[in-house]
Amino acid sequence: MTWNELLKSLSVRWAIVFCLLSLLIVIFYLPHFYGHVIEPKSGVYLNDIFLNLFTPFNWSVLIFSMIYISILQTIFSVARRPYFIVLGLTTYFAVTLIRMGTMYLVTLEPPVDMIFLTDPLSTKFYPNGTFAKDMFFSGHVSTMMVLVLIEKNKWARRVKIGFTFAIGVLLAWQHVHYTIDILVAPLVTSVVFYSLKNILGPAIKD
Image (cartoon, rainbow, N blue to C red; front, side, top):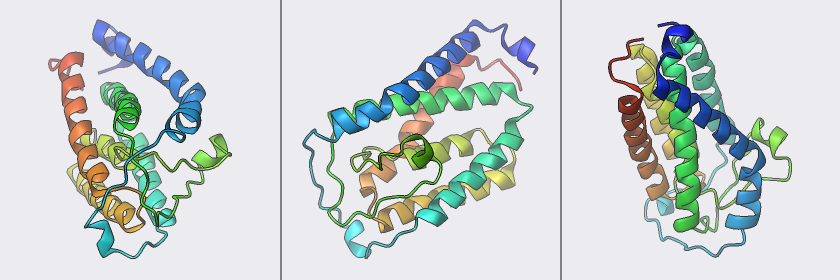
């Protein structure tokens, strides 16, 4: 399906508008939301039995290597599949907005012995530092789930599933997220993805 054919769908056009508006929110409001809304807000500490099994270790390089490899592969994979580009981006931005809501409603304090993730890309856009309370639920696992769900190649999909599982474990090991953050992320992302797929039109064939 070409872009011209896809854009005949009203729901797809609205999805693109939603993505553009969400992008503006992410660029211009998200840093303020993290730094001035969530950070000063008191949260709850969780006694996470699973995290207590691990002595924190900095896995940032490995975590972001898997994420960026997956993103680059996905760009090549969906380059000629505009429907999945729209579906993937709409899912990503919808989940991002949901995360903003859950972070505000269910504010968690990070684990005391948390080791901050160091993302070489995001620090270019947010040079003032990382955000400790980017907790419920995991954006990294959610992003990986989006990449899994729009992948059509079964072998690449299996690799991404493996990466997603590994990233979840490493995030817990580094004490970046509580177990509940990691487990909820793929569930919410999957619900959003399949809901949007239905809204955008199950009859649309790529």
